[in-house]
Image (cartoon, rainbow, N blue to C red; front, top):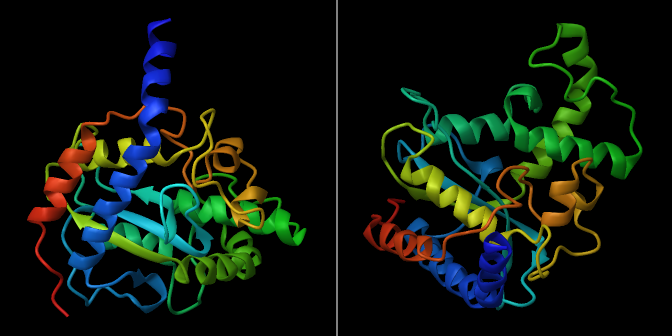
Length: 245
């Protein structure tokens, strides 16, 4: 009963918190100068060592919380103790390989989810997609065409990032911002706000949590957010240095 009561209280103020979230996102865009595209990004650019990223899609508009694009993916990296992975390491996992135009969906859940949606949307046959943590060369060669479609799809999604350089841990501030942002944005088992468009690619994903949350996320979509995270998020954005062009 307590859990249900808490969810009801949070739900009643979720719209105002969504509006506040997107006001903070606007501040973040000013710090990033503009939204980035992975298709035009590379490791030679100036990136913070650690951070949280937010992806958008040009076809996905906000309906209830104001004007502009809605966030459709939130992520971070290095949440395991002593992990040395950087923000760009993770973004490059999602971007894929420049040489072939493909990538490795077994190293990026974002790529995996996008791929399942493309398979259903285009009625393709890729029975090995998402099978195992690694694959033999002939399997990867067979999957290359789909990996290229995934790279193009993600490469065209605008994104922002916030620098949060803390210790690698599941209890890190980055993990806290990621988890609560997803829980706030998610429509999974909640009143639907800023709903996905009827043509959103994610509607074809084989994961129920993606389809019903409106996000390319599988974790945290069914959790309750802590409203106080917004104040922390805003403070982090205010303290972030403007990106150098």
